[in-house]
Length: 141
Image (cartoon, rainbow, N blue to C red; front, side, top):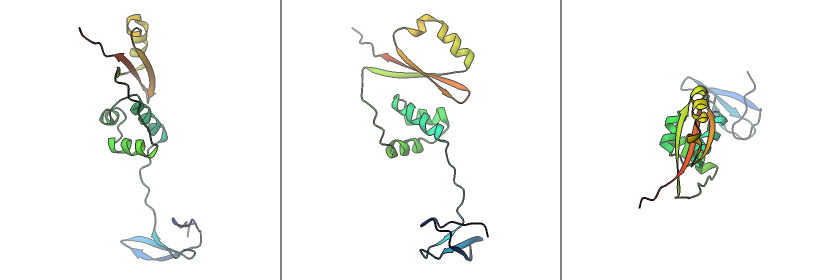
C-alpha cells in the first residue's frame, strides 16, 4: 500500500478499512478518523491569483476579470475576501484597459499622443499584454 496520510492529523499510521461507493476507505489508528482517497481538485496557478488581485486593485470589475483571465468571478471574490484586499476609493479617476499582442503594444507606445494625459501600467497575461490607463473624468462646463 502506498504511504497514505491522514488528512486530519497527517499521520502515516493508516490501514485499509473497506470500500465505499467503489472507493477505498482508510482508517487512521492515531486519531480514529475514517477517510477515502482524496480526489485531485482543480488548483489554480498562483500566477492567476496574483493577476486577478492586481486587476481588482486597478478597479476592474469581477466579471471583467473573469472575461480576461477565464477564472470564475466567484473565485476572484473569494480571493479578495481571503487576502482582505481593500480597493482605495478615488472617484476622480477611472481605469480603462486594452489587450494587445507584442506588435500592437509597440505600435501603441510609439505614438506620443497615446502617452499623454493619463497614468498607465502594462502587465503580461499569458502571451498578451494588458494596458491599464487612468484618465481623469472631465467635468463638462
